[in-house]
Figure (cartoon, chains in turn brown, purple):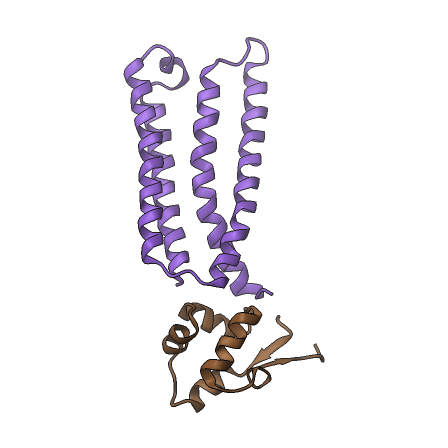
Length: 70
Length: 145
């Protein structure tokens, strides 16, 4: 499992319950990639990570956290 | 299902039908013994594998235009040739051992050059689809970084 955790699902709900499809369109990836990210089954590139943070208008570390305990 | 995954699945379904058609026609028309003497048979086989290859290419190109590919898909796509390579190596090993065992005494008929080439092309095309599907399956199972 990935050591990098994310709060994408939480942030989507905090942003007027943004759908996975809508987020995918905003950041330029497929909905399946958003699903994989939320399930912790895929770690995005730095570029995609920044695009996601920009879509939520928050700093990168509010979306992704490095879990050192694993 | 991701668009690329869907594309690979269509490729695999077509590829399976394609291989089955080639094998069935080859056996029904008389196999290795008739192949050298019957020009009509050879033309049918040519039509099947070249036509299939062209159709496969058109199918993949058409689906490619319709499908959005992102970095995760590209990662999986980039790893698919490993499956292609193993499939081809496995196929060549099977051909080599089988032909050596069967034709050791009398020598291998030249028709097998044609059959080996045809099978490598067909298996290579299908193995890419399998590689993509395995990529999605493994990513779903273990995740990926």
